[in-house]
Length: 162
Image (cartoon, rainbow, N blue to C red; front, side):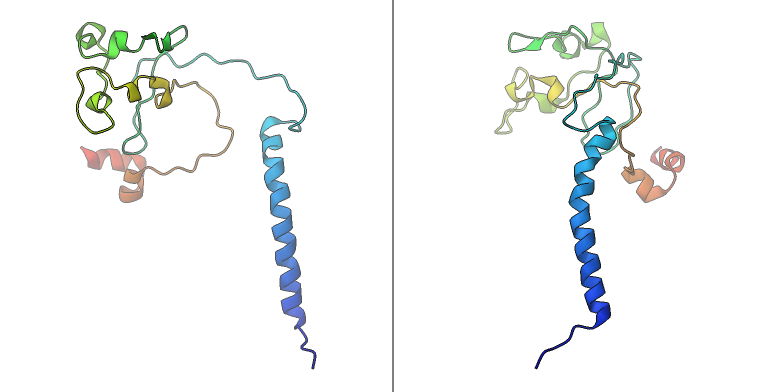
């Protein structure tokens, strides 16, 4: 005896297959939509934008977020021979430079012991800290700060923290 699949079930199966097959095609076209040209086509890169140089500390969006760099770092030497960031951010230079000292976590070795000098694991600052540029994002950002989730509107969250 042959079982017949109801028409509604068959249509649902065909619809699910169509959506499933269309999704990878959409995902492949996403980079082209952001680039404004096919991925195989060579395009002229957008002009470089000057980094923010306001020296204003920015609020962090989540716990344990590394602070962003609020100034230009063009021409800074940051390699195995020298770390220009430490000219201002090391403990002994912060009073004269008025720059914030690097976190004590930067002096911890991989075993959790504190070191007298900057940990080699934390030597290359740009692994975590990045300069900012006044650009529009390529994709919408729907990130919601934890305070905003807990307390509502951003201004209300700021007021409750005080």
